[in-house]
Image (cartoon, rainbow, N blue to C red; front, top):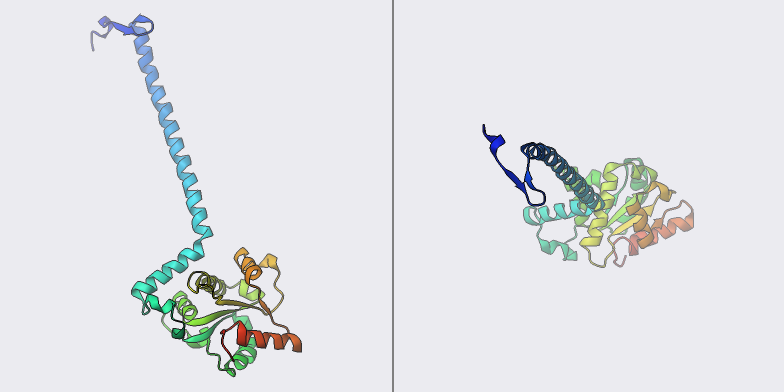
Amino acid sequence: MADFQYYQFFNDKTGQMFTTDVLDDISHLKYRYYSYTFIIITCVIVLALFMSIVIGGFVYKNRWKLRYLMYRTRNTFFGHRNSAYYTVIQNYQFDAFISYEEDNTRFILDDVIPRLETENVSLCLHQRDFLPGNEISDNIIHAIQSSRKTVVILSNAFLKSKWCMYEFNMGRMESIYSRGEEISLVIVMLETVPNSAMPLEMVRWIQDNNYIEYTTDHEGNALFEDKQTCDNIVNRTC
């Protein structure tokens, strides 16, 4: 390139170009390259952020469904149950899995267990029927899938418990995706719980499927006993 100044350059529009003009154009190419590179990198980053937000939103919105399907797939192919388990109602080990927070244990021991088990309703309780050594999540899934109904004893303390909410959401997924037209999740309102304190999924479930309200007066108590025992718990004749 020692004789670069002796080269002749031509432009389609202006004809012959001076060497200094060519050098100026070459120097500008570097800045154009940097400009295009910056635009491309910016577009890639913006697109990646947009896709991350979309995928993250989808995963969050369907997090319980995805988690439930993951457990069900794992149990179907690697667990002790096959797919026929989900369709054969006679295979249920329990009539109802009782989901409750530890603060409500006295209510379960004094009211729920005596009342239902005297009616020959077979109950699954975590402190009695969960298998030691198994993961809590596996015990919960097994209890829900082994029971004809999942009964949520709803209280303000229930909403603050991670595992109680896990039981509610897994019971909800089981009812939606594995039980056909049968509603297998029953909510018993043990105390006044404002809608503002509930997650949106629970509010929608109550709006679509109603709930049983437990009260201490005789009329409310009898209503709780009759509906919970006969119709809403096991769907069988007591």
